[in-house]
Length: 557
Ligand code: HAS
Image 1 (cartoon, helix red, strand yellow):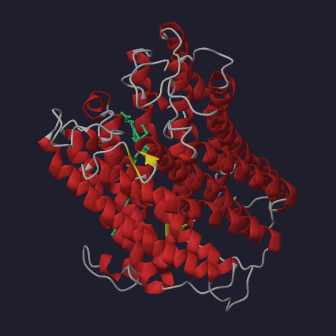
Image 2: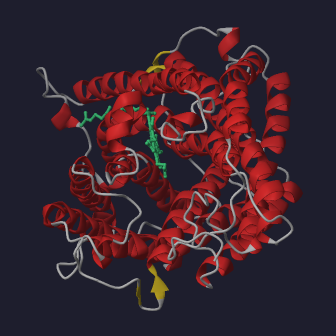
């Protein structure tokens, strides 16, 4: 289908800006591994401080890229499946707010005035523009939800008795999760951190700020994941040469994410003394609830791929695997998706380790954690985003993909890199290696009294993985920018998706065609899980904390 030129420009801008910033994000990822392997024994390199680089890495990769992409892909999904375009004015206002917000936060980070990492936990303190910029970017990303819900209402009236397209069901659910969870972080930023950073308040309630952050923070990871799930359920089966095993399972999956994504944030605070053990146990159990839709997805994707492999001529117990189009450059999205799924097997299981209350004490704040989350956010999430960005650019600009063979191997190279990188981090984590630490200054510096020789092999392994990931990143940029800037050969402003049919296209179940009951259930479960957590935080929070900068352990300087 053809879309308006203005909408195409909005989508392309929302892809081009974060992917350009990703160059900085990926560079700082590599530098992390170099510092941590002890190749650099300094607190800064090339004029950028270690924590400044780590903040740029986390904020660009995990907050900016993901939010811009989710909005851009959301516009494309809504326009394509509902056959009606988002309204021009709110769409453009949303885009500009996100751009201006990002520019404000980027200035603070590049100026070295916001070395607070992507979680911006107080008492680490950033420049007010960092907080304001993030708030403005988030508000910008809220606007499309209200527009899309209006469009969906209109579609339901004109398509009475039809199922809401699965991709739209998933996209709208994702943005309801996003809107709800960001309310807490908006409160934290606007009413706690900003006045404190402006000097209007002397101290900040750290326990409350952390709890408000994690109300947002874990739902955030599903906001990253759900666009990838939309692609797996809606496009992967067709790309594999088959059909989606069950349409209903897809709907159930997204609905469970809606009710369980938010009331689990305390599993990031198992070691916080300000929250009671009972509250932690409740949210630990709810965390197993939020793993359920991914188990459903794993079984559905295996069944879907097996069906496709057999349809492609595969025989025997495992013969179907070899019949999947792993290296077909005309179906390169398959390569991006399958590598993400393979990584998620490991990312998911390490998540279950983290969620298990006692085991968490072994891995919390160790290198095991970045090991886990690079197999999730740098696995299915980023691979789906990168693959789909090339796909959208090629269609909307009417250009053939640049270097198609290279494009097909990027995800495999990336996957190998992540597997090596995460294995190194998890190995180190199990030996007590801390996360978020410039190991090269002391623990990985043979001249230091604190030198830990037992961490040498795992940090070197991590660095090897980091180099492979970096190389895959460079190849990706060649493909992306090569496609973006090459000569146009086809009609532009086109939008087509490889939409899959369902093998089991179950009859309409009203509960899985209407979001309202699920939203009510979501609110109820959040109240049950979070009222005790907030009460705990007010009862047990210590005195307010003065500001603190990362390179001095003395608060208030
Ligand atoms: Fe997590 C910490 C628990 C999923 C990201 N997580 C993090 C952090 C990040 C993150 C960024 O309970 C660090 C935050 C920080 O800075 O402190 N996580 C979980 C659990 C899940 C989970 C239970 N995490 C994710 C996803 C993320 C993400 C998704 C990003 C997108 N995580 C935790 C906990 C912590 C944590 C604790 C805090 C720890 C601490 O102490 O600080 C679950 O949702 C995972 C369920 C997933 C599965 C896997 C299903 C597998 C599939 C693949 C199938 C493969 C196929 C391929 C079909 C059960 C779907 C077949 C291949 C062929 C060739 C045929």
